[in-house]
Image (tube, rainbow, N blue to C red; front, side, top):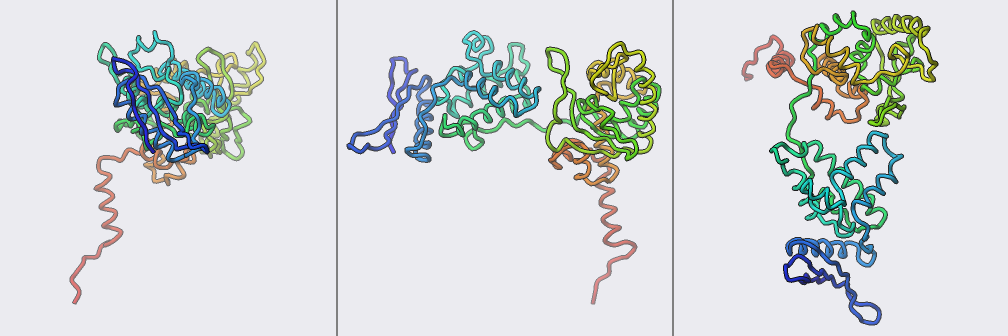
Length: 405
Protein backbone atom coordinates (compact mmCIF):
# COMPACT_ATOMS: atom_id res chain seq x y z
CA UNK A 1 0.00 0.00 0.00
CA UNK A 2 1.43 3.35 -1.07
CA UNK A 3 0.83 6.94 -0.02
CA UNK A 4 2.17 10.42 -0.56
CA UNK A 5 2.40 13.81 1.14
CA UNK A 6 2.30 16.86 -1.17
CA UNK A 7 2.78 20.50 -0.16
CA UNK A 8 -0.26 22.67 -0.97
CA UNK A 9 1.00 26.14 -0.02
CA UNK A 10 4.23 28.11 -0.16
CA UNK A 11 4.70 28.28 3.61
CA UNK A 12 4.59 24.52 4.02
CA UNK A 13 1.66 24.54 6.45
CA UNK A 14 -0.92 22.73 4.31
CA UNK A 15 -0.43 19.23 2.90
CA UNK A 16 -2.37 16.84 0.71
CA UNK A 17 -2.23 13.25 1.96
CA UNK A 18 -3.16 10.53 -0.55
CA UNK A 19 -3.31 6.79 0.05
CA UNK A 20 -3.75 4.31 -2.79
CA UNK A 21 -6.34 1.65 -1.99
CA UNK A 22 -5.82 -0.38 -5.15
CA UNK A 23 -8.05 -0.49 -8.24
CA UNK A 24 -11.78 -0.79 -8.77
CA UNK A 25 -13.56 -3.32 -11.04
CA UNK A 26 -12.72 -1.19 -14.11
CA UNK A 27 -9.03 -1.02 -13.24
CA UNK A 28 -9.20 2.60 -12.10
CA UNK A 29 -7.07 3.52 -9.07
CA UNK A 30 -8.91 4.30 -5.84
CA UNK A 31 -7.47 7.00 -3.56
CA UNK A 32 -8.36 8.27 -0.13
CA UNK A 33 -7.30 11.91 0.26
CA UNK A 34 -7.04 14.25 3.24
CA UNK A 35 -5.89 17.81 3.72
CA UNK A 36 -3.57 18.25 6.71
CA UNK A 37 -2.71 21.58 8.36
CA UNK A 38 0.56 21.69 10.28
CA UNK A 39 4.15 20.57 9.93
CA UNK A 40 5.31 18.06 7.34
CA UNK A 41 6.32 15.63 10.08
CA UNK A 42 2.73 15.68 11.36
CA UNK A 43 1.41 15.00 7.85
CA UNK A 44 3.80 12.07 7.51
CA UNK A 45 2.61 10.69 10.86
CA UNK A 46 -0.98 11.01 9.69
CA UNK A 47 -0.11 9.20 6.45
CA UNK A 48 1.34 6.29 8.42
CA UNK A 49 -1.78 6.20 10.60
CA UNK A 50 -4.03 6.06 7.53
CA UNK A 51 -1.98 3.28 5.93
CA UNK A 52 -2.17 1.28 9.17
CA UNK A 53 -5.94 1.82 9.31
CA UNK A 54 -6.44 0.65 5.73
CA UNK A 55 -4.20 -2.38 6.22
CA UNK A 56 -6.23 -3.35 9.28
CA UNK A 57 -9.73 -2.67 7.96
CA UNK A 58 -9.32 -2.82 4.19
CA UNK A 59 -12.42 -1.89 2.26
CA UNK A 60 -14.43 -1.76 5.49
CA UNK A 61 -12.43 1.20 6.76
CA UNK A 62 -15.03 3.92 7.44
CA UNK A 63 -14.89 7.28 5.70
CA UNK A 64 -13.38 9.66 8.30
CA UNK A 65 -16.03 11.82 9.94
CA UNK A 66 -15.83 15.56 9.20
CA UNK A 67 -17.63 16.44 12.44
CA UNK A 68 -15.45 18.72 14.60
CA UNK A 69 -13.98 17.04 17.66
CA UNK A 70 -15.53 19.58 20.07
CA UNK A 71 -19.01 19.07 18.62
CA UNK A 72 -18.58 15.30 18.63
CA UNK A 73 -17.44 15.28 22.26
CA UNK A 74 -20.48 17.30 23.32
CA UNK A 75 -22.80 14.95 21.40
CA UNK A 76 -21.08 11.91 22.96
CA UNK A 77 -21.44 13.39 26.46
CA UNK A 78 -25.16 13.94 25.84
CA UNK A 79 -25.72 10.42 24.45
CA UNK A 80 -23.98 8.75 27.39
CA UNK A 81 -25.25 11.10 30.11
CA UNK A 82 -27.70 8.58 31.58
CA UNK A 83 -24.98 5.91 31.83
CA UNK A 84 -23.01 7.80 34.49
CA UNK A 85 -23.68 9.66 37.73
CA UNK A 86 -24.85 13.32 37.46
CA UNK A 87 -21.55 14.60 38.90
CA UNK A 88 -19.58 12.61 36.30
CA UNK A 89 -21.78 13.91 33.47
CA UNK A 90 -21.32 17.51 34.67
CA UNK A 91 -17.55 17.06 34.97
CA UNK A 92 -17.39 15.66 31.43
CA UNK A 93 -19.11 18.71 29.98
CA UNK A 94 -16.88 21.08 31.92
CA UNK A 95 -13.77 19.22 30.76
CA UNK A 96 -14.84 19.24 27.10
CA UNK A 97 -15.66 22.95 27.05
CA UNK A 98 -12.51 23.89 28.98
CA UNK A 99 -9.83 21.67 27.46
CA UNK A 100 -11.16 20.90 23.96
CA UNK A 101 -12.67 24.26 22.93
CA UNK A 102 -13.57 25.22 19.38
CA UNK A 103 -13.69 28.95 20.10
CA UNK A 104 -10.50 30.55 18.69
CA UNK A 105 -10.53 33.17 21.45
CA UNK A 106 -10.41 30.49 24.15
CA UNK A 107 -7.71 28.57 22.30
CA UNK A 108 -5.57 31.69 22.12
CA UNK A 109 -6.28 32.77 25.70
CA UNK A 110 -5.23 29.44 27.19
CA UNK A 111 -2.48 28.76 24.61
CA UNK A 112 -3.97 25.44 23.50
CA UNK A 113 -3.69 23.67 20.17
CA UNK A 114 -6.72 23.66 17.86
CA UNK A 115 -7.48 19.99 18.53
CA UNK A 116 -11.11 20.80 19.33
CA UNK A 117 -11.49 22.39 15.89
CA UNK A 118 -10.12 19.40 13.99
CA UNK A 119 -12.52 17.13 12.10
CA UNK A 120 -12.92 13.88 13.99
CA UNK A 121 -11.32 11.88 11.18
CA UNK A 122 -8.17 13.99 11.32
CA UNK A 123 -7.50 13.63 15.02
CA UNK A 124 -4.18 11.78 15.11
CA UNK A 125 -1.90 10.53 17.91
CA UNK A 126 0.51 13.33 17.03
CA UNK A 127 -2.21 15.98 17.35
CA UNK A 128 -3.25 14.53 20.72
CA UNK A 129 0.35 14.45 21.95
CA UNK A 130 0.79 18.11 21.00
CA UNK A 131 -2.46 19.04 22.73
CA UNK A 132 -1.46 17.23 25.93
CA UNK A 133 1.86 19.08 25.79
CA UNK A 134 -0.04 22.40 25.62
CA UNK A 135 -2.05 21.38 28.69
CA UNK A 136 1.17 20.62 30.56
CA UNK A 137 2.56 24.07 29.76
CA UNK A 138 2.82 26.18 32.97
CA UNK A 139 0.68 29.27 33.44
CA UNK A 140 2.14 32.77 33.13
CA UNK A 141 2.96 32.78 36.86
CA UNK A 142 4.86 29.50 36.56
CA UNK A 143 2.28 27.34 38.37
CA UNK A 144 1.13 24.09 36.74
CA UNK A 145 -1.89 24.40 34.48
CA UNK A 146 -3.17 20.95 35.43
CA UNK A 147 -2.22 18.44 38.10
CA UNK A 148 -1.16 14.97 36.99
CA UNK A 149 -4.45 13.48 38.18
CA UNK A 150 -6.42 16.11 36.22
CA UNK A 151 -4.36 15.38 33.11
CA UNK A 152 -5.21 11.72 33.45
CA UNK A 153 -8.93 12.49 33.76
CA UNK A 154 -8.89 14.77 30.71
CA UNK A 155 -7.14 12.11 28.65
CA UNK A 156 -9.49 9.39 29.91
CA UNK A 157 -12.54 11.36 28.73
CA UNK A 158 -11.01 11.82 25.28
CA UNK A 159 -10.06 8.16 24.99
CA UNK A 160 -13.54 6.97 26.06
CA UNK A 161 -15.22 9.29 23.56
CA UNK A 162 -12.99 8.18 20.68
CA UNK A 163 -13.49 4.52 21.60
CA UNK A 164 -17.23 5.17 21.19
CA UNK A 165 -16.53 6.77 17.79
CA UNK A 166 -14.79 3.57 16.65
CA UNK A 167 -17.81 1.49 17.75
CA UNK A 168 -20.10 3.79 15.74
CA UNK A 169 -17.77 3.54 12.71
CA UNK A 170 -17.04 7.27 12.66
CA UNK A 171 -13.31 6.45 12.69
CA UNK A 172 -11.41 3.20 12.11
CA UNK A 173 -8.87 3.38 14.93
CA UNK A 174 -8.86 5.14 18.29
CA UNK A 175 -5.94 7.62 18.05
CA UNK A 176 -5.93 7.93 21.85
CA UNK A 177 -5.54 4.20 22.54
CA UNK A 178 -2.82 3.24 25.00
CA UNK A 179 -0.70 1.56 22.30
CA UNK A 180 -0.50 4.86 20.36
CA UNK A 181 -0.36 7.42 23.19
CA UNK A 182 1.55 7.34 26.45
CA UNK A 183 -1.13 7.60 29.13
CA UNK A 184 -0.36 10.51 31.52
CA UNK A 185 0.85 8.95 34.74
CA UNK A 186 0.90 10.72 38.07
CA UNK A 187 4.02 10.54 40.22
CA UNK A 188 3.74 8.59 43.43
CA UNK A 189 1.52 10.60 45.72
CA UNK A 190 2.01 11.14 49.41
CA UNK A 191 -0.58 9.36 51.52
CA UNK A 192 -3.75 11.27 52.30
CA UNK A 193 -4.36 12.62 55.77
CA UNK A 194 -5.34 9.73 58.05
CA UNK A 195 -5.79 9.38 61.78
CA UNK A 196 -3.77 6.88 63.77
CA UNK A 197 -5.57 4.53 66.14
CA UNK A 198 -4.68 6.77 69.10
CA UNK A 199 -5.85 9.90 67.25
CA UNK A 200 -9.12 8.20 66.27
CA UNK A 201 -9.73 7.27 69.90
CA UNK A 202 -9.09 10.87 70.96
CA UNK A 203 -11.42 12.10 68.24
CA UNK A 204 -14.27 9.89 69.45
CA UNK A 205 -13.78 11.04 73.06
CA UNK A 206 -14.17 14.69 72.02
CA UNK A 207 -16.94 13.86 69.52
CA UNK A 208 -19.29 12.88 72.37
CA UNK A 209 -19.89 16.58 73.08
CA UNK A 210 -20.68 17.54 69.46
CA UNK A 211 -24.17 17.91 67.96
CA UNK A 212 -23.21 15.62 65.09
CA UNK A 213 -21.55 13.00 67.28
CA UNK A 214 -23.61 10.20 65.68
CA UNK A 215 -22.47 11.24 62.21
CA UNK A 216 -18.83 11.05 63.29
CA UNK A 217 -19.38 7.66 64.95
CA UNK A 218 -21.11 6.16 61.92
CA UNK A 219 -18.49 7.63 59.58
CA UNK A 220 -15.51 6.20 61.40
CA UNK A 221 -17.14 2.81 62.13
CA UNK A 222 -18.48 2.19 58.60
CA UNK A 223 -16.02 3.94 56.29
CA UNK A 224 -18.85 5.25 54.10
CA UNK A 225 -18.21 7.93 51.48
CA UNK A 226 -19.58 11.40 52.37
CA UNK A 227 -22.46 11.18 49.88
CA UNK A 228 -23.37 7.72 51.18
CA UNK A 229 -23.37 8.94 54.79
CA UNK A 230 -25.52 12.01 54.12
CA UNK A 231 -27.88 9.99 51.91
CA UNK A 232 -28.65 7.42 54.62
CA UNK A 233 -32.30 7.14 55.58
CA UNK A 234 -33.67 5.31 58.59
CA UNK A 235 -34.99 2.55 56.34
CA UNK A 236 -31.33 1.70 55.66
CA UNK A 237 -30.56 1.21 59.36
CA UNK A 238 -31.42 -2.14 60.92
CA UNK A 239 -30.79 -1.77 64.63
CA UNK A 240 -31.90 -5.31 65.44
CA UNK A 241 -29.39 -6.86 63.03
CA UNK A 242 -26.82 -4.14 63.79
CA UNK A 243 -26.14 -3.24 60.16
CA UNK A 244 -26.21 -0.32 57.74
CA UNK A 245 -27.24 -0.77 54.09
CA UNK A 246 -25.69 1.52 51.49
CA UNK A 247 -28.21 1.85 48.65
CA UNK A 248 -28.01 5.50 47.58
CA UNK A 249 -25.95 8.66 47.72
CA UNK A 250 -26.77 12.35 48.25
CA UNK A 251 -25.54 14.52 45.38
CA UNK A 252 -25.44 18.32 45.30
CA UNK A 253 -25.00 19.95 41.85
CA UNK A 254 -22.94 23.15 41.74
CA UNK A 255 -26.04 25.11 40.78
CA UNK A 256 -27.64 24.33 44.13
CA UNK A 257 -30.22 21.91 45.48
CA UNK A 258 -29.76 18.20 45.98
CA UNK A 259 -30.83 14.87 44.55
CA UNK A 260 -30.53 11.18 45.37
CA UNK A 261 -28.38 9.07 43.04
CA UNK A 262 -27.24 5.47 42.86
CA UNK A 263 -24.00 4.63 44.71
CA UNK A 264 -20.72 5.28 42.91
CA UNK A 265 -20.33 1.74 41.52
CA UNK A 266 -22.34 -1.52 41.66
CA UNK A 267 -19.84 -2.75 44.26
CA UNK A 268 -20.76 0.26 46.42
CA UNK A 269 -24.15 -1.30 47.21
CA UNK A 270 -23.32 -3.17 50.38
CA UNK A 271 -24.35 -4.04 53.93
CA UNK A 272 -21.97 -3.03 56.73
CA UNK A 273 -22.17 -4.59 60.21
CA UNK A 274 -21.78 -2.10 63.08
CA UNK A 275 -20.72 -2.68 66.71
CA UNK A 276 -23.12 -2.51 69.66
CA UNK A 277 -21.77 0.92 70.68
CA UNK A 278 -22.84 2.42 67.34
CA UNK A 279 -26.26 0.75 67.60
CA UNK A 280 -26.75 2.43 70.97
CA UNK A 281 -25.58 5.74 69.54
CA UNK A 282 -28.08 5.48 66.67
CA UNK A 283 -30.89 4.63 69.11
CA UNK A 284 -30.05 7.74 71.16
CA UNK A 285 -29.89 9.82 67.97
CA UNK A 286 -33.28 8.55 66.77
CA UNK A 287 -34.96 9.61 70.01
CA UNK A 288 -33.30 13.05 69.89
CA UNK A 289 -34.34 13.51 66.27
CA UNK A 290 -37.95 12.55 67.01
CA UNK A 291 -38.08 15.38 69.57
CA UNK A 292 -36.39 17.79 67.17
CA UNK A 293 -38.84 16.76 64.44
CA UNK A 294 -41.67 18.40 66.40
CA UNK A 295 -40.13 21.78 65.63
CA UNK A 296 -39.72 21.24 61.90
CA UNK A 297 -41.88 23.72 59.99
CA UNK A 298 -42.15 21.59 56.86
CA UNK A 299 -42.75 17.94 56.09
CA UNK A 300 -39.97 16.10 54.29
CA UNK A 301 -40.43 13.26 51.83
CA UNK A 302 -37.08 11.75 52.87
CA UNK A 303 -36.41 10.33 56.31
CA UNK A 304 -32.71 11.20 56.51
CA UNK A 305 -30.65 9.98 59.45
CA UNK A 306 -28.51 13.13 59.55
CA UNK A 307 -30.24 16.48 59.14
CA UNK A 308 -30.09 20.17 59.92
CA UNK A 309 -32.31 21.68 62.62
CA UNK A 310 -35.10 22.10 60.05
CA UNK A 311 -34.94 18.50 58.80
CA UNK A 312 -33.16 19.27 55.52
CA UNK A 313 -30.17 17.10 54.49
CA UNK A 314 -26.70 18.18 55.56
CA UNK A 315 -24.18 19.86 53.27
CA UNK A 316 -20.82 18.09 53.52
CA UNK A 317 -18.66 21.22 53.29
CA UNK A 318 -20.81 23.13 55.80
CA UNK A 319 -20.76 20.47 58.50
CA UNK A 320 -17.03 19.96 57.93
CA UNK A 321 -16.13 23.63 58.38
CA UNK A 322 -18.63 24.48 61.11
CA UNK A 323 -18.28 21.34 63.23
CA UNK A 324 -15.55 18.92 62.21
CA UNK A 325 -12.72 21.44 61.97
CA UNK A 326 -13.40 23.04 65.40
CA UNK A 327 -13.79 19.56 66.90
CA UNK A 328 -10.44 18.44 65.47
CA UNK A 329 -8.79 21.60 66.78
CA UNK A 330 -10.11 21.01 70.31
CA UNK A 331 -8.85 17.44 70.20
CA UNK A 332 -5.39 18.58 69.07
CA UNK A 333 -5.67 16.69 65.76
CA UNK A 334 -4.17 17.68 62.38
CA UNK A 335 -5.88 20.50 60.50
CA UNK A 336 -7.73 19.69 57.31
CA UNK A 337 -9.80 16.73 58.48
CA UNK A 338 -12.92 15.98 56.45
CA UNK A 339 -15.41 13.15 56.06
CA UNK A 340 -13.04 11.35 53.71
CA UNK A 341 -10.41 11.45 56.47
CA UNK A 342 -12.75 9.42 58.67
CA UNK A 343 -13.27 6.90 55.85
CA UNK A 344 -9.50 6.76 55.48
CA UNK A 345 -9.07 6.21 59.23
CA UNK A 346 -11.62 3.39 59.16
CA UNK A 347 -9.78 1.57 56.36
CA UNK A 348 -6.32 2.10 57.86
CA UNK A 349 -7.32 0.89 61.33
CA UNK A 350 -9.11 -2.13 59.84
CA UNK A 351 -6.00 -3.12 57.87
CA UNK A 352 -3.61 -2.52 60.78
CA UNK A 353 -5.86 -4.63 63.00
CA UNK A 354 -5.01 -7.65 60.85
CA UNK A 355 -8.23 -7.82 58.80
CA UNK A 356 -8.07 -9.32 55.34
CA UNK A 357 -7.69 -6.72 52.58
CA UNK A 358 -10.55 -8.27 50.57
CA UNK A 359 -12.87 -7.87 53.56
CA UNK A 360 -11.82 -4.22 53.99
CA UNK A 361 -12.37 -3.58 50.28
CA UNK A 362 -15.89 -4.99 50.56
CA UNK A 363 -16.69 -2.72 53.53
CA UNK A 364 -15.46 0.31 51.60
CA UNK A 365 -17.34 -0.64 48.42
CA UNK A 366 -14.12 -1.10 46.44
CA UNK A 367 -13.59 -3.76 43.79
CA UNK A 368 -9.82 -3.30 43.57
CA UNK A 369 -7.96 -4.75 46.56
CA UNK A 370 -4.65 -3.40 45.27
CA UNK A 371 -6.00 0.16 45.28
CA UNK A 372 -7.19 -0.32 48.86
CA UNK A 373 -3.73 -1.43 49.98
CA UNK A 374 -1.95 1.36 48.07
CA UNK A 375 -4.30 4.03 49.38
CA UNK A 376 -5.02 3.03 52.96
CA UNK A 377 -2.21 0.82 54.24
CA UNK A 378 0.56 2.73 56.03
CA UNK A 379 3.10 0.27 57.51
CA UNK A 380 4.61 1.36 60.86
CA UNK A 381 8.35 2.15 60.92
CA UNK A 382 9.30 -1.18 62.50
CA UNK A 383 6.83 -3.27 60.51
CA UNK A 384 9.53 -5.06 58.49
CA UNK A 385 11.58 -5.83 61.59
CA UNK A 386 8.52 -7.16 63.45
CA UNK A 387 7.53 -9.26 60.43
CA UNK A 388 11.03 -10.73 60.28
CA UNK A 389 10.88 -11.64 63.97
CA UNK A 390 7.52 -13.38 63.47
CA UNK A 391 8.93 -15.26 60.48
CA UNK A 392 11.85 -16.50 62.56
CA UNK A 393 9.54 -17.57 65.36
CA UNK A 394 7.27 -19.44 62.95
CA UNK A 395 10.10 -21.29 61.19
CA UNK A 396 12.41 -21.98 64.10
CA UNK A 397 10.61 -21.37 67.37
CA UNK A 398 13.03 -22.15 70.21
CA UNK A 399 15.05 -24.60 68.12
CA UNK A 400 18.60 -24.05 66.99
CA UNK A 401 19.71 -25.47 63.67
CA UNK A 402 22.62 -27.94 63.79
CA UNK A 403 24.43 -29.62 60.89
CA UNK A 404 23.08 -33.06 60.03
CA UNK A 405 25.43 -36.06 59.58
